[in-house]
Length: 249
Length: 339
Image (cartoon, rainbow over the protein chains, first blue to last red):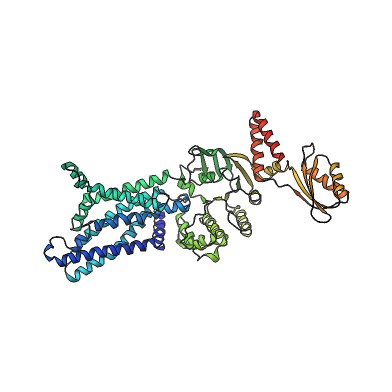
């Protein structure tokens, strides 16, 4: 895993040498800040609605405003990883070094997950804001962040797969967005089908429901296994795609 | 050190490399020579393990590049012709990253030393802190070369190592490659004939994905010089005197004579088929000119274009392989003579 560490360091540095990471960071914070303010205003105007879910719980998975930027930004974080190397020809040098394909994939994957964690990090300040005027259940909050990280980890793995398939960053982004939003929409099948079996089946895929659980502090191992499976499957596929596309210009 | 057997590589319906075999011994510098599209890069890519061959095998130091890929790759430093470098890193950082990838440990400053050595050999010390993206093309090429040698692998595979260098840098790089040849087995590709002559102990000439000829430089050179077909001669003296002299030498035809200065003329001469060797005829012609008190100032053997060399080599091979193809080969040669 020596190579994974070397690639992780370079990828992470490269992410912050280009303006893209900062653009994502700023847009993401503006978006989440706006959502948070909307939620606070809602609660301030209607004090009677506060039940089990406060503004912090609703921030995580309470609305499409939570999912939309994740669906968009995960493939944006990963679109560079393989597509840019293929375009620039550096993939040839990378893959002819004595490194395993899986080491390369993991190095790039963990770097992208770290960028994803970095864009979420500043939102921890919201909790401090809430604590000033009320109470924060830190374990519930930790569960919400766990869910957010699992969701992001799965989407980023799909984004890595998209980038491994593509030759340009734009294609990588489009394929990546198709994969993340495809998985998200599949989960919404729960609200479309009527039979109980179908609903039970799709609720396993339903990220919206999963996040509502995580947001109130319910850590269901089935969800954890689901997201980690998506990660494993997508990364395994990425390794296979890299192998199959070796030498393809 | 490197053994290739019946290598084939097809891209869809197109065959880039069509059944080539060769052996490269330890410590040799071998040049792959051929026009664009001859399959040089494809062959080198297969050697480096980047491209799986459609058929055939390559082993490096006994390790199959496909089966024992990791161990084989650890033995080689490969420089692709695309000059793959990360523009956002500094030269030193880039080489350090590549050294780490190639397993050079940082203990005892080994990695730092490896990077310093690679930069010294490629004369990059004064650019160590530069961003790779800010370097000129020639310097980028040197960074890629430094990358190939940073882990000090026993085998170097260099795809067009002098492609974007200026004349001084080309000489530097040739010297470097020659000096590395003492402890490394080196494979270089190029489409420039003098380049191979300057660096390589052996040469493999490729055309259309096949080996047209291989051997030491001397063997190849012997094949090429034996059929020199023309020369240019600059002399001081009368045209008529020269014509008389030329007529006296067997197997020589004057094509044209142009006055360059008042009394100095340039003659274009063709060596037609004859019993005597081309070099002997050149010698006789020059002697005759001197004997006739013509001031010979310059004799240039017509440089054959590489293209012509390849055509000759391939047509000769075909003629030798399949007797039935003799006619077309002869026709080819006749056509070339007319040019």
